Image 1 (cartoon, rainbow, N blue to C red):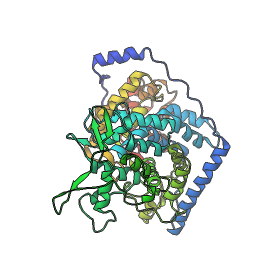
Image 2: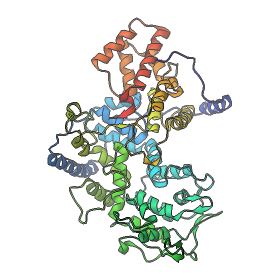
Image 3: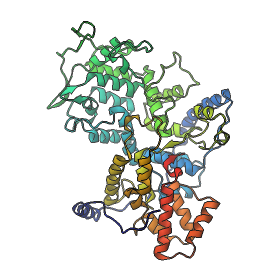
Image 4: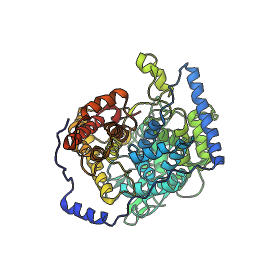
Length: 542
């Protein structure tokens, strides 16, 4: 366990002084009220759809003869929601308010409040941006990820229909700083060239959930996509250009490719690989493509969004890989999760928040991550394939540092926190993700932990500073203010793991705290924090 060290400032003094000057003028966090109940009529409608989702799950379990896990504790579900929607664990302040809300529908109301919290829009926009524009840095002057994610966050917070946002990404014109949606186009700009092939592949992967990239060079013998289809999609971007005034279109420009067989150039007209009846007759090729991608009859769009959103909530997509979905069934299947949720998503104005609420209300999301099969070693694959238990997934790097930062504070760290607190968290997140390793846009794929990551948690500056018992940290305040040893241990567990200690855990740490005073007591609480930070339970979503 780490030895006690004096508090170390991680910011240059000049920066710290400037931040502290701003902090002195900042308002204190407002009191967060218990969320009100939504209208019964709206909840009844959502409950009907959630019941259909649960019917599909029940049929899958019955067909595979699998018994689902027991329901998870509500605090455990709250932790899942907080990690998925806000990128960190719930604060002690939030847990106390949640437990003080004794209404039977509290979990539903808290889910709605979390979706309306600005933290959701800020965090989820970054996660969606990974799929929409990739994880590469791009050319900073031309591609402004910060402007794109800020715009996306603002629109998600306003609950702008997602199909509208996708149309803007594909078809908008203007400067990438003033019209941030155009960064979807500029992310494909490199070495003074706009890569139309990259844009075509990204469009189909991100918005239709399918991989067409292999058709860029040849007709694959085992894939339905053909090279001519890929070229037609790329030609939809062929008139796009980037100038000093921003993204625009040159109607006189022809899209040409070099034939691999004859080595001669040939012109390719904009075209779509299926659903030609959804392809508008008028408008620029990009505007027509945007309308085709989001057309109400293009069920690939809604299924792709549902599958990606499911993956962001569970850490694992319903259909894997997230961007390689099978073709939708010819006739809408009422027994298919993607069909049920996709149909509701489309019929309710592509409402992302409603979709997330429905997924979070499903039985699959609220099941325990523990299942008898894991103890017996039998039929584990069946349990995982049928979503009969909540899947165990490692926290992503930004979730890890988000959990570390929030666990070190009694108060909720959000947009209302002191400027210094928010700035310190931002700096820590950037540094931690850089050292921990960024998963890139493939973050929903199965991954294993690494030794350097474990060492960073064990010996890294971030874990040490957040566990350190200071007058401002959770461990220091717990040490000085908890009325009893048991209360101190319980509070630390709630801050870090969103649960209370077991009888054995409580007895173990109680023995270490008995008769400890002052710095010795603070050291024990600090060491307890360090142990919890490095426990497997802290590092996984469950």
